[in-house]
Length: 147
Image 1 (spheres, rainbow, N blue to C red):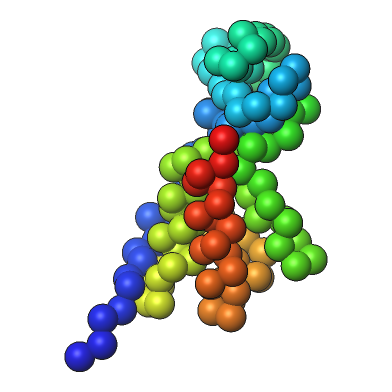
Image 2 (tube, rainbow, N blue to C red; image 1 turned 45 degrees about the vertical axis):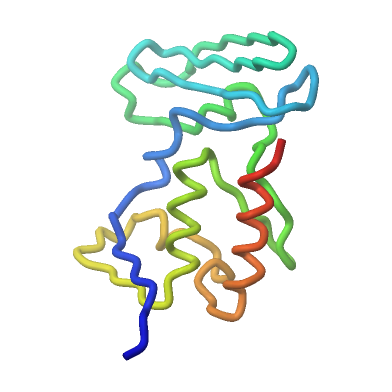
């Protein structure tokens, strides 16, 4: 009997990962965290290495009908970012990276009750292709240990 690494789609949306985003600190270029509170209409970028703190208001309606990832309020570069062939591999935070890792590593991918807007359905083709599995998993391993 052959063991298959199974992934069950949780039907997550990209917006599930918007509130906490790992970024490159604009002051010291080390890892920082950008957060957004859509209810309070505010975003923050905090670096524990150099004590950089930036604050911004979200320019969108308070009901949260238009939301964007926390790093976009500061034009900050994503920390979990790597080139891959003619594309870019990225994750917003550790939870997002782990979700992508489980999906990419899986040899059996189950999708139930898809809504048509899940994060997995919006990924570029190279994320889905088995021929890229090993290379993408190496990128993920590097990003997990990036300091």
